[in-house]
Image (cartoon, rainbow, N blue to C red; front, side):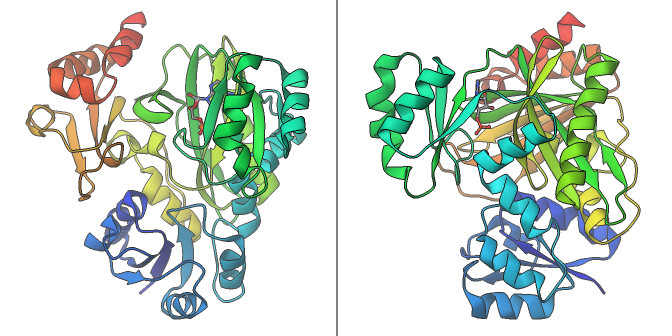
Length: 382
Ligand code: AMP
């Protein structure tokens, strides 16, 4: 009996456990909170990621370790790797934890990125703005997610306000300034690399964000030329090979015409890949488990088309989605809290017309919760 240890007990760990049960796997989830929603589906050990006694107990009970949460201290990942196989490896995790090292790696690998510069003082911010120009975005290098730890600088008049908002973090988590990309759309490629180097990518997905948080995903992304699909997958492959990555990860890209610019990588299963549970032969969750266990990866081949809608704050009524032939409901079992990711729905259909009809039928309440209209508009473009 193989036991997979997961650091972090959120919805990603929960969906990994749900995907792993048919494979005969056992799980142990480590999280500081006794309320972690993965604990409803798998044994939960309550403990800190930096608590050596907790890590010791955890490591003694698992055969392999992986992550639901990438901001586990690098020292804890390193401590574990000396005792049990850890995938992805701590070096890959460390690169993805820091926007500066991540963007530097992308650039070294020939992957286009927005202009960027590290900032560690107020004078440094002035210099970065002179170099990059406005509009731009200042972000924390570490621990930022879902648009948190970011400030948009529309013109130089915003400099003081930006420093006021984030300057205190220059000496702690570090800061980076990035040129603002006037993108047409945002896409992501979710990919998986096995222990033996086998690499596969899921179809390119288009994503809509509201206030920096993912709202809806459409797969496959429409109007993607063969060249663009190949380019995106090639970028993901370069990152995976350069970091010796094992498991699933997501590469988020800005799309301007046919040009792709890398925004960031998530070293784990990703929200923009949730639609794969119903939308592909093997889901991102199962593919990740197969990869970290050294099993054949399976085929990320699509079954028709799919749209995922995120539920933030509180779960809406499920009936409209459950009434659909291709409607799938995922309630993470979390208590309601403003802005919190509490669940999602995936609508799957055989073609764009049927998917559009399904989206139109979910009703106003759900449309307000997630961005349904832009997805319908995109599908109508063909
Ligand atoms: P991030 O946390 O870096 O993924 O940023 C969250 C969201 O903010 C992204 O999905 C984009 O919608 C937006 N964003 C971040 N960086 C940039 C940028 N350099 N240019 C334009 N929009 C951005």
